[in-house]
Length: 237
Image 1: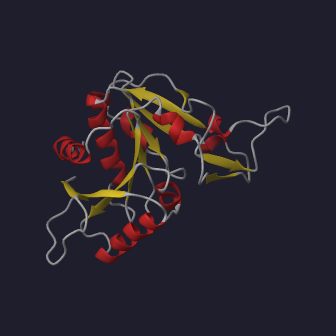
Image 2: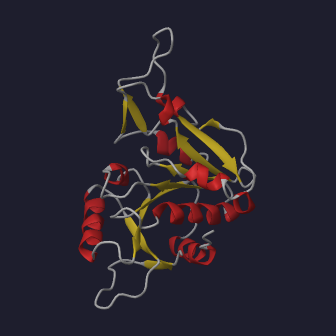
Image 3: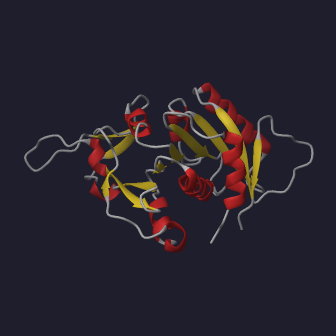
């Protein structure tokens, strides 16, 4: 079990609480294996403990879904899971299927049918799963670069926490950056070099993202480099 309660509380304090309408925060790293999913999950858990509205954890790694299974494995911390339900409040989605899905009668099916959600912590935390097993042979999924999904979801949520796949294997974070209210980068000691992280920050900002800070995961202070934006230190073993 990895408990980052103290570190995520510090990050919550640095980011401030959402005022009025909900907000969408994306967590991403430059390289695989830096602990983004763990940090995003822990942050969502901590937010859910204090939020007036439910917190949503969106697993945006559509190729390797892991968040829902991770919460189910820790009932002592996340509580028993509730029943599955649709993850879209208005039938929109942040992705689309190519070619479009159709039912047995040949009628088009909405993309939102491929995204389900499950509640935890007495419905204070909801986590999504993309149902890749429902894809037809030859069918693929791609992200919408413009969609009303995030606005619709934020009307029901305090904070939407988006767990994005690492930039070294997917462009999803860059596609989503401009649709988010803020981006938090996760950096793990010993994974890659400083330049790759700075390059990702520049790419995110060029894509319209607002980088709010950085979380150090399993890190010790590095000599000769001070991050040019706010930082919160998280240690995961």
